[in-house]
Amino acid sequence: MSSQAWINLAYLTASMLFIVAFKLMTGPRTAVKGNYLGAAGMAIAILAACFEKPIVQSVAANGAWPLVMLGVACLIGGVIGAMMAIRYPMTGMPQMVALLNGFGGAASVLVAGAELASTCNLAFCNDPGKAAMATTSLAPWTQFAIATALTGLIGAVTFWGSLVAFAKLEELPRFKKAWTDPNRHWINAGLAIATLLLIWGVCANPSWTLLYWLLVIVGSALGCTLTLPIGGADMPVVICLLNSYSGLAAAAAGFVIDNSVLVIAGSLVGASGLILTAIMCKAMNRSLVGVLFGGLGTTAVVSGDDIYAGKIKSVSAEEIAMVLEGAERVVIVPGYGLAVAQAQHAVRELANALEKRGCTVEYAIHPVAGRMPGHMNVLLAEADIPYEKLREMDDINPTFPETDVAIVIGANDVVNPAARTDPKSPIAGMPILDVDKAKTVVVVKRSLSPGFAGIPNPLFAADNTLMYFADGKKAILDLTNALQ
Image (cartoon, rainbow, N blue to C red; front, side, top):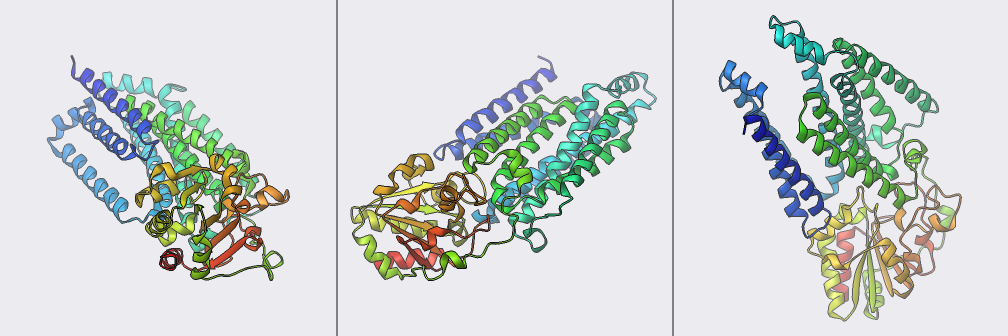
């Protein structure tokens, strides 16, 4: 076989590993193995790319220097990635995912830009053969021209949109409050029209590289203006959507440089991101248009004085322990507050103490609990909590009336009964965990502060609810000690 055939075979192998990795990462038991297979596939793809004809020619002309630069770049990127993965806390995983999405988009923009500049230079070189090939690529409305324009737009939107999402998830002061300018839709419409005109310009005149970079600049602005108005409550959906964008940008870049593994891997990421976006929208009973333009969580925080006044029952760990002593079935509902407090190991100890008394303990997982899909599953798996005890919302909701005690730790909007009872609520119609139907509800929170949606929760003032105000980890540890 020719060298290109071996390279294609390596790309095919890498693509198969990516597909298997996606399948394995759908379950917690096989997720680690899937992650390793995906990394192996990427290593094979990078190694195969080193034998592509342009790199071989560059090595022949410049010695080993191009390979040294490639090795240094891989080393720097690997070290940065490893440090981020090791040092970033579990609560920061959504932010890190947002950054990784953004970096993928930026890489695609730079790849397409570099290929466009290189092709333009070849078109004016002294080698007639190379000039003819380059001129063919730069012809209007070719695959190269269309893919380049789409890569520039999608990659730029992804990069800057992801940076804004990162800033929102980090709750940076200037980004914590959503952009609610009444003219924002007109601004977005104007930027969208400008991008369409620039796409037409790049496709019609691909040799005008300035148009490409103007498209990148306008796309960058559009990425910011599309993400700035989105409230914190919709961030799980936005992360999924940006993940899809990064895959689509990579797939388009694959068409630009005629690289099959980029097309396949990018398509996988793009498709999975869109599927996950649809799942998240369904879990929140929101349309994608409603997420992008509705602004859930962008309004001012509503006061809960009328709901909470005189109705809050604050209790101690000893009082809750007395309630748990007679419980036969307990359901624990984890939320972002549990992740912030790093209370997953303390929760496992509490569950062990309850099970020693003959109590059945299960965990109710809402699809959008935390700040990204699967956040709570990963967090609880970190504490070696058996996967069989994690119950999905649709599966566990019918059992809440038979539950003796539901312990809510740091969750808010996903257990807010206003979604079911108040048609005027911003979260009306959003599927929730029906913890209010349990015989007794124990809510562990630092305060009565609202969730991402910025609205009060009537659950906290319900007759069957006991509020335990404390840091999540300390509260669970004190509760375990009191129970023992």
